[in-house]
Image (cartoon, rainbow over all chains, first blue to last red; front, side, top):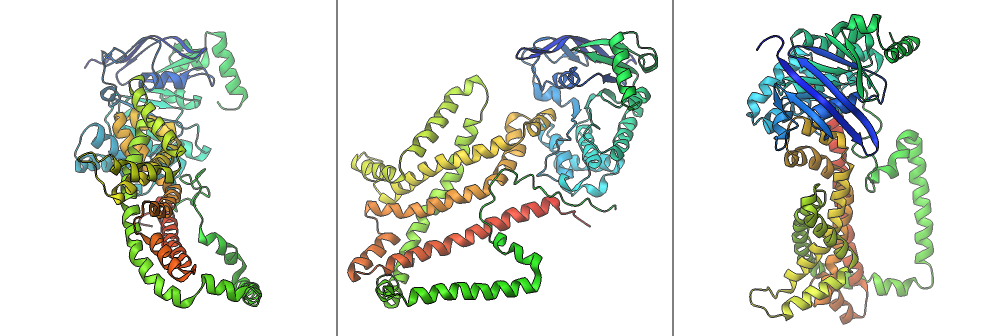
Length: 251
Length: 296
């Protein structure tokens, strides 16, 4: 695959909840191995956008393509599509009635049809890589927030996704637990994982992103390299948003 | 390995779900008060109940009450006979319970299906639960127990036990279906989203993620309905079937004494309490397992 092959294309995406227009024409192209960070105020549509990419929300208009295949076409097998897209949620959403191991192997065994032993092997490898090997037989309630979120990332990785979508994965964490999760994401980026990351961590976005998109009222108002967006934003709304982050002492 | 975090105070599984009567709640305050508290509790209990027993036994009506309800000779005669026939009740309610567990689950799942195409199934499930929760159990037993055999259609069983089981299973499946449904709806949508995001089908999401959590949460209210069903197995008496209540009735009329009823009441109490404790143990075991760090 060439370096500029498109992993994900979004064309003219619209999405409303009843009267509320959340996404009003989003266009985005993500190349393979690219890390794109979505920034913007709460309610700007970041989470909805990610959920649409994973077909968790039906879209009103537009097209989404993964590796060149239109996933929003009629009659597409959504279960097969989702196997190629990993998503990690703000609130972890681990399965509380299953051990860490089973959380990680459920997808591979039941969605991919892997043998349990093979899935366990893959899970063990991933858990070891992210320092969670000792937790394999624990239930999620016993883990810290940071550990739970790392398990959630491993659970998504166990499906060997083409693209990872991260939805404010550190927003529900105590400040001292944020770093361990961000380090995992850095490692993924270093390993060439294609990622779309909605985040409030501006410093992290500046470090990790190849490209930053500022979402405002359901559209990508401005996008560019992190240096440009964070140091010389062109749009007035982007400037105001970043100023409010600086004022809050968050950057 | 680093120290595990303290277990959370709020049990997420139990939140919002009645946990059933727990014997341990009565004893709980004693644990904080220590040995002196226990001693005080023992003395005050003996004094309190001693006074009540003394007052009752010395009241003018006591000999009459004792003879009519607590006659030792009649009890000794009636109890083994009642227990022997109570096995028939046990057969009726255990068989009914097995069907209830299965039928109610099917009804609850049908009712939670989404999508326009499933409307007829949803409507059917809703109509069924509405209907059988509305009709008095005894009426259903009359209708099926007398009505079905009276049809004399070939192939339709005529056994009153068969129809009693069908009637109880129909009525209680309606209740239990609602219990299951409450459990299914209590599983947070984010759990479904996580499972679907992994590429699991609706069916597998239900099977691996929703139902296991739903069933765990509804075990205590499920027991409530099972105790109700066990007690209602006595309604079969109206079909003239000789089960425990009918046996008690016969002994009562032979002696003009109500002790056999008290004996039967005792049987029901004795079978119910262990079930309540068993459910407590089950819930507690599940809670501990999820919160216990393995290998620490």
